[in-house]
Image 1 (spheres, rainbow, N blue to C red):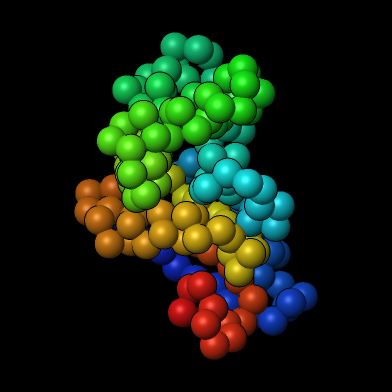
Image 2 (tube, one colour):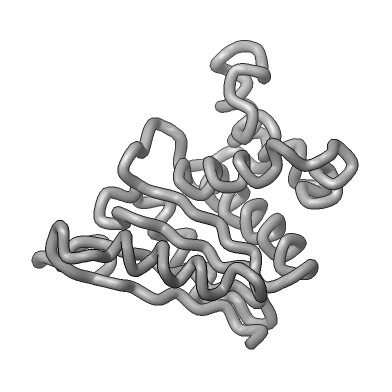
Length: 173
């Protein structure tokens, strides 16, 4: 519809949330680009499920398409989307703090860079982002989803996140 939306599917373990996401993906595959991620294997990078799904999407793209999608954010995102190719571990830190160093600067730059990339993806066709096991997601991923929900005006992006039933203090309360 042109408005970003985040939908939470919640239920107990084993109830069929993952199957529901898979069935939904099949239903919308002809009319939208479907990107599937899981927070089950979250590592050390902020936004790792989102960065992983972007890396998979861009892995098979020709270099000119890859650079068009990454746009000016390539400088920030490319080392994070191609782990190990940046050289030393300090390169990741340098990328994230080189733009106005500060406690919140790196996450803000990263969040906005990823939104910009999704904006370019959505310009081609609507995007459906499916995130399974969101109850395991890192704080940066949840913050990014909140940013998309609050400021995704004009962005044909639907994020469907599946998580276990919330307990008090749950990340998606």
